[in-house]
Length: 245
Ligand code: SAM
Image (cartoon, rainbow, N blue to C red; front, side, top):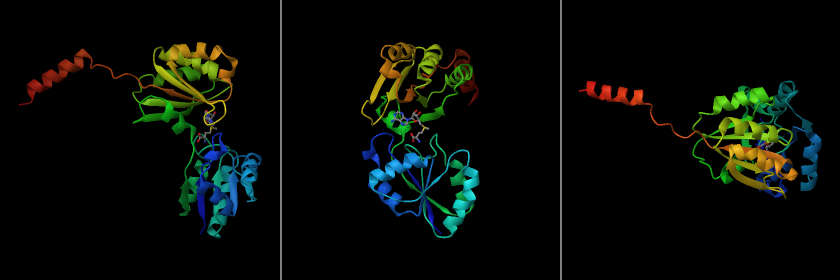
């Protein structure tokens, strides 16, 4: 049987496609793409004429059986999304789980992903982190989600679009106040920018220059500071120490 290759593509700078990624895109029988027109531009840039087929969140389950039949038939398939690593806030999860359930082989061609790119330049702790993907789009639900995450000690990473970055920054300020946030914008592109601020200063920083709300964003948010043990817990510990011989 053929292999399903999960191929990362650039998040902006075309130079970030790996040599192996380009080779696989040229060798496979078919490329399943989130948006075939978008992927066609990348293939044209590489001088490749590989066939493409659309695979997005609305047809993923329906497409899976046909793709599995092709794999069983010995064809190889690459899955790509519009940018970065497929399945990371992008389609592909259902396809991969169907293909695995069918006992077929899935292999990775790793590369860019905005979550890792932003985390690695954030200046915030990277040893443990939580990826939240996109926060809820409605203000009330977004605030609630941020409140639920306020005590999370690990660094938090979120994706945000230009439509909502200002409203999201206002909520971050209201919920997290003095917490450090690194905003990374347009990573690997001409106008790449990243800045580390207090959550409560983010909205004003964005409002200062209309260009700052343009493009694609990753927010990297410091985890909650470790809290001192409450007095009652300390005394309980002391009592337990007394009791244990
Ligand atoms: N699969 C992609 C990945 O691996 O990063 C993510 C796809 S998701 C639909 C798109 C979101 O990723 C954007 O709204 C933005 O939050 C983030 N993103 C993608 N490219 C970016 C870039 N060059 N700079 C900053 N954020 C980016």
